[in-house]
Image 1 (cartoon, helix red, strand yellow):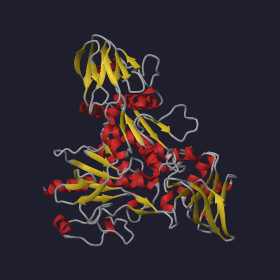
Image 2 (spheres, rainbow, N blue to C red):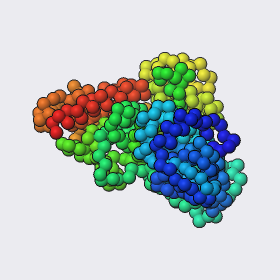
Image 3 (cartoon, rainbow, N blue to C red):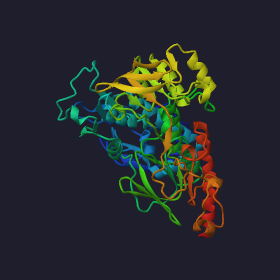
Image 4 (cartoon, helix red, strand yellow):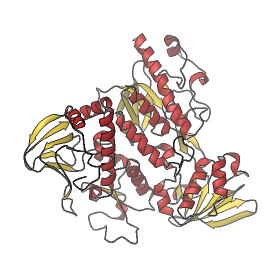
Length: 550
């Protein structure tokens, strides 16, 4: 990030670029030692260095001294991705001597990104590259997660940090190669997972607590009224938010866990348009989130929505913590919740050997082990291949007698050609065995029952729509939301509007549904992206009609 960093970290600006960038800033003289922003600040500015130098430091923590990370001189700028996603500052910037800077506040930064494509691209690439660099260095000590790879709660916290690409470090208390004693600082094993944020210890930490401390939770502001609220940040939700914001709608994106949805748990998507070599769900989510920040989408997670109050003018979303989000239109993209198997000890082993995701995090945890994958659709096939690629011996258990019944042919062919994957068709899981963790699995097939080694079981047997909170929306008997021409009952609101539901619009005016949660959807990533973006076209039509009747 400093003198020896690459072009992406400290890009060389042309005279024209620098002059345009300066036009968005407010000048300020600095003195030696003057703090420009400090770790923990709720909001801070992008700093343009015109004369003098600015140092960026990780402040001292109770186990380590202050460390200088970068020195930035004239015609450079100070800042990283937190400027866009709303995260509190985790580093401190200080003037090293007398000089002149320009401050660009958040609103001016967003205006610059909307008005100047060249500067926008340069800024995005630089802020992103700096975040990636900081994740690998001493800045990672600003958020230290102490946990166990065998703990469901630790995995949830770690997954949240990785999904949001937070600058952090993870200390596994069960790692036999750990070169220092993690205890003796006022916490014990009963306290894990522990989050140490800027030296502050949070015992039994949850993603929600971490979001509050980092400034990533939804901050209730009574005077804010969004044009569009998107509930669910999977592919459909991210697409809806990006298209809405890019077309001028003030947009907020809420998710109960973290951006990505089920797609973020997929180790490799082979048939997504534009990625001939495949793309991981994590990478796709990462790039989509950056795109959302580019257009000014406000993302809050974890941020569970528990109720929708549909009103004539502005809809109200009640959050689990009691906060209210107000928006003129809502797009529901909450997707589906994973199904489990009706087996003894299932709940006990969930998170302790049983997984519903095969992202890079889970793949690293079980590399080289015997694992069982349950399911006959693409998610199961992709997981099996990803696990085999990590050196696992994989048993793919499919209830159907034909693997090609629900799985894409390209996956079927690759699985059949992989000697590390043993396919068991017409077979089901009949039992789970182990102590604190899963160790063995009973399979029941045409030849009877067999107990096999399995330190991990990955379950992809379908899901149910996450729609219990949508009591006022018309749904089918299984919970999927009716939209457009599928809406059967039209209430008084529709007669007053003198129109029928638009494509993707639900039984409640200006409430839309897209992606897996919608009845009749295709249940594929590409289809979800298409639905999310298409739903925004209907949002515009509904809001335009609302203006006419206002």
